[in-house]
Length: 310
Ligand SMILES: NC(=O)c1ccc[n+]([C@@H]2O[C@H](COP(=O)([O-])OP(=O)(O)OC[C@H]3O[C@@H](n4cnc5c(N)ncnc54)[C@H](O)[C@@H]3O)[C@@H](O)[C@H]2O)c1
Image (tube, rainbow, N blue to C red):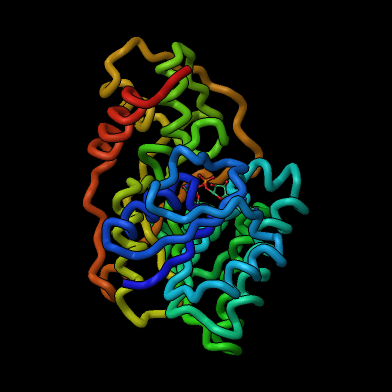
């Protein structure tokens, strides 16, 4: 079928993408520095290199020995709060990392590079909801600014060197294997806290909304973009807003334990509402999410109940 490079393939979204690619008979090479990912997430049929995306020399070596038909680029500093605390680190990994990759592949581009951007924070304070891709992004956090810069870099390298790309602006992705220690991923954090007998902390009044999308829907969008010549930017979400309070209630209904919540101080700079229009992706590739938030949370709770260890 062809060879695929997955950066960040030991992480949450990366490892599910690897599983799907292997199921579809692709040969998969993963690079990951295991900073937030886990080797236990990795499919045994993938070839693994413990490399930092910023390591020019080792990255070059991989490309000297392989041609990749497709590249999924997931390796990133993913934590919005960490981006604020350590902006230079965020820029180094996220912008430095993709430049490293693009500089190497410009001589011999893959058929497509599929980049994981953010729909959750890229649009900033817009009051157009659900937000279509035509709204000009004005992120108000370093992480969003670095992801937007990556999109601009992809566009420039496409125009200059013909590197075909899609930048997928994911909503808030959740599901099995999400890292509950990373402060990103409220659903994984709530479930793991409840299973360890701790209370869930809701920052602010809990009425803030997000577009939560189940991992299997994200994977189906990722794979769908391999099978066409489309280039550009796409939201990948559900078009539905769900509040953090509602998320807590759904999890409580599913776990059925005496789950407690406490309200903490609102996090400065966090968006009040976020929701993605999915008209473009629907129209152009006929993709639709399949899982309701209730179904997705049920599957996630089931997985955590089996796999979560305190
Ligand atoms: N989870 C979400 O809701 C969400 C939403 C929008 C976009 N994204 C993007 O999707 C991608 C995957 O996110 P995720 O939720 O799976 O996070 P994750 O932390 O589980 O995965 C990231 C992976 O990249 C690896 N990594 C980090 N820095 C690296 C480096 N310098 N060199 C090599 N590997 C490195 C980590 O070890 C990890 O395995 C990220 O680019 C993230 O910004 C995620």
